Image (cartoon, one colour):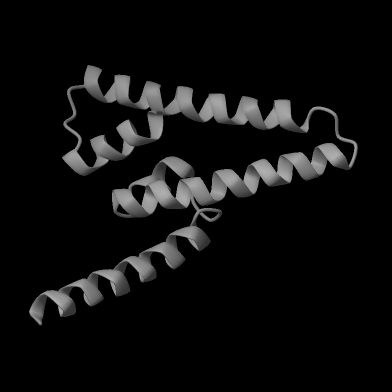
Length: 110
């Protein structure tokens, strides 16, 4: 009985975080947005927005913008490079990231 209530509470919380995170993605820099939510929500929200942005790139390509997909690829590569550099700088400065932030960065690399 109590376990069912716990499960319901977890689902309600995740539903709230998912809807909030997907809306907030456009309002904040990605590197800040990633750490504002639990790792599961950040990962899922990233996948939702990646799919949306890829669809936008394909639509722009169909509309005649020849470099739409290449431009989106450049954006993705720059995002990855920024995240790698951020982690290297933090290690160099010996700033300890909380475990949940490390797991978010690790999941988004691969």
